[in-house]
Length: 208
Image 1 (cartoon, rainbow, N blue to C red):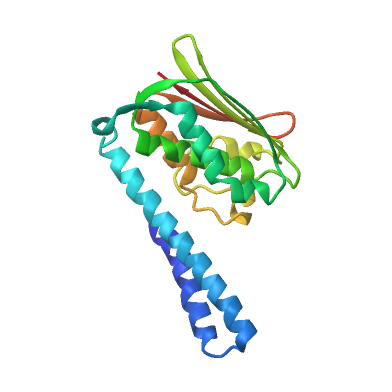
Image 2 (cartoon, rainbow, N blue to C red; image 1 turned 60 degrees about the horizontal axis):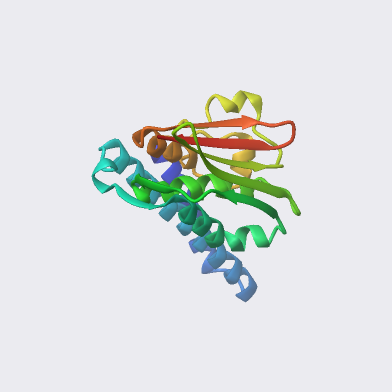
């Protein structure tokens, strides 16, 4: 699986690099954009594989600190602003102030991935609801979108490494985002689930 995922962007980079030598100015610009896109995809893939390796090796426990979980999620939303503002997405954000002890540098990847997916699959002018609360000694985070949802046959595999449904392939994913989320949340002693709604999808993270 790793070999296949690396081969796709590398082949694309090689192909566009060859075309670059023959194209006119407009063609060279397009080739350069495609090379940069696939280079970014390759870099993200490598980064996710390294993160999975760190979590697999239990590196997460040695890096626990106390921090504001609500501020970290708010920061993730702000940093993703270029993606959601371009689609004119309406956000409903309800974040309870929570001091949390965990691996701050790892958990940011959980929020980035779940919020990023909600943005990616939301339609133009869509809606995303984000909530963080503390109930019954548990931290509960949810993010909802009004996108197309996940095909029923794919729901059981969304956390599998390198798994991609036809819908996710259209968005040029790597198939590692939700696997990384699952690994980090599990290592933190929590649980994560994704479910379809009547319209859209909801992701829920529960942390101790």
